[in-house]
Image 1: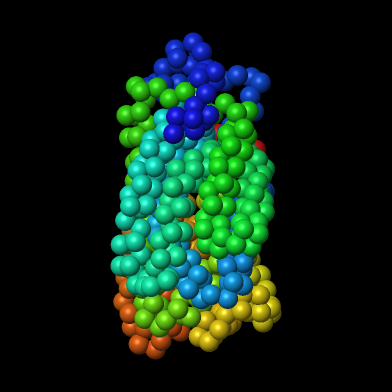
Image 2 (image 1 turned 90 degrees about the vertical axis):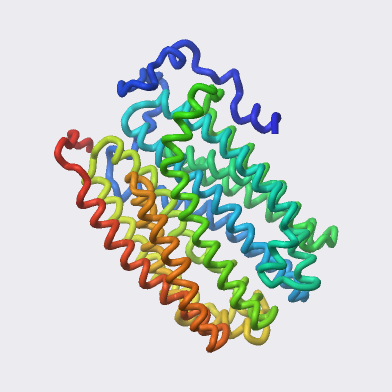
Length: 482
């Protein structure tokens, strides 16, 4: 822990008397080194271009990461042991909850730092970012230890049994050990996006993906380690991401050595967004856990089919997921600068791009579904589940995209409880009763029930997002920068 902390927060990067003397409690903007690039770059220029550049570079990075995850699943599936693929599904349900915590804290970090940069308060942004990242590291380390200890009991409660339970426990325990690395990597990548450095944020993700892809092949097949090899590969790739992100962030001078007197203020401001965002993001895997539990009633093949879909979705919808994560800095900077019309432009542009992405994805999966099932070789009901997804259920993810875009708007406009309410609404009212009813018609009914929940809550969320944006205070707008 000491080594990682010293690497992230090098004392040599303190900002001297100027930063220490800055009145971070005042509303005056600090003096910024003229050699530094303007960190609030999203407060001027074409919004559609900003959205496209941020989303496309983010999509490349995410697609690389998710493609490696999919490749990992491909390797495991070709060991011809359904217990291993089912084990990944069960372990993934717990891992998603772990990562949801990291994502939630990262959302709070990005939203708060983006607003400070938009308002020109760079010194405060530095100290808040540094202090909160240190806090994130400690929390994620504690969660990793707890999961490592109780992994067997958690997986058994989900319905894992026998060899599936044993394999899933081993995999989850190894990956939980590296949870702090996930948190640090996400936080640093979010800061890169917040400063507008989309290219380096993408490169960081690509480095992790390349490392993982190479090690997966070597450890799973070369050393015949199966799931253990996949887990070890995950740990090493996460460390590569943390290292690459740190090296990329140094040029932006957005991190400094944390000071104890700023911990309380940073936790209060960042936590005001992060805490509801954590609750928001936990809702998604919570709903997924219920779906996995419902699918478990129909055997390992049903779980394998659901797991196959879960691995296809992130790759197929990488642009949508990247869009929702990448437009946050655009929204927060313009909100901090009080350019409210640009916030609405960002929302409209994001929704249009979401619609185009889902249409293209639907056509692609429909046309190439036979090739997909050939690659992953699902059997029995798993085969039917994949075909159903490619034929019809893909369309429902447009509404999930609406929900994610809306959540980004809420989180970056100081309305995080709205996103919490909608996500938990979808995970509970939009999942549990509908999936429970659908389960009476088998695995297909479960998936249809899940889709209906997406449609309802995605539609209501986007209408609410427009209401929030249209009611921002326009009484004292600052001049427009173009």
